[in-house]
Image 1 (spheres, rainbow, N blue to C red):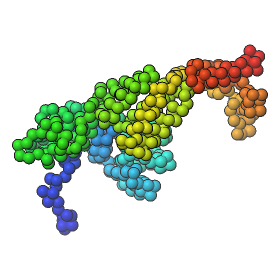
Image 2 (image 1 turned 30 degrees about the vertical axis):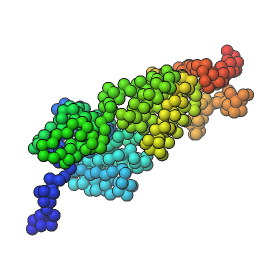
Image 3 (image 1 turned 90 degrees about the vertical axis):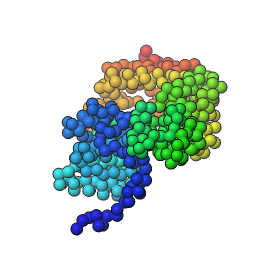
Image 4 (image 1 turned 120 degrees about the vertical axis):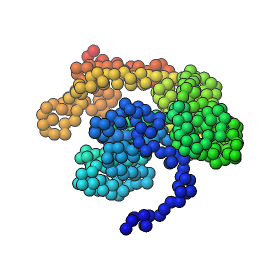
Length: 438
């Protein structure tokens, strides 16, 4: 008996009302737009499939760039079973069910591609649960995230997966999507050239968004009507950004804001901050950049700068827009008027260079713990002086690897709070020379 008797038939008229973005979903990797470095003829994913060496991956990129679609197409072209879960709605019990189903398939000789949307929302313990099934080949994990994997995912998980970056759609690929939509709809988009360009800016590099906006335009248009930019704005109730956040305008303004803060000009900093708000920039992006300015350009010259910027970001999270924008403006002015120092920033870069160059050197044995008799017998911990038991709570011992010798990375300037730090460092240097006989 045909299964069709038990399957509800979707009338053709109803099927045609599926969202345009869904109807235009690619059916093969070759149809994917906007990611030629991944899905093009010489793209990484095409090479992996051709070589039969598909491994676990993290797809990192903004919304609407095709992460879910590409994962599904990968499973089809590689002949893998496809499972999809969302970290927002799934817990440990859901993961166990998925893993068990994948194990059963593997016993039948078929591997599973497990796609995890918003994988960064899983906590560390949940992320760790993927490790055994990745290692024994039960699943090929493909996680999708809009957040930086280096900060949001466990190092153990990252070490077992390759991070692939999805890029925002550029104007050319969004135009290509609109052209495909016009073919499907069998009619042109009723917009002037200027309005069409404005619609693309509104989408802000999001392929799903540009198709949704186009669909709204077609629904609103009467017979023979063509909308200009003002008409488009009225229909979709959205203003085109003053600049494209993925292009030069975005980087020009954030650069101008950063340099105004570094140059201690609060008025110019507020001007560029206001322009970014007016252009529709994500306020949390601005908040993150202010935090970066606090640690790069103010540093320990004013330790409160980082505290205030984090508090401003949290205040925006709590208040939302537009009230929360004032908190970010307050942080911006604080940074611009704070004493400036890149002492920690330059010290960290110098320390990183030294770590890469001398990363194989062992710390001196006197500062290593000796939890076992064998290690104690090898001299671990011998001669260590507990600083709190020493005069001035300072032993003056050397903590660098013996073969490297003492290094100086941090050189605080005589500005702000770092003036006090300089006094402490000079005092400890004097004690160190006295106690070492130097």
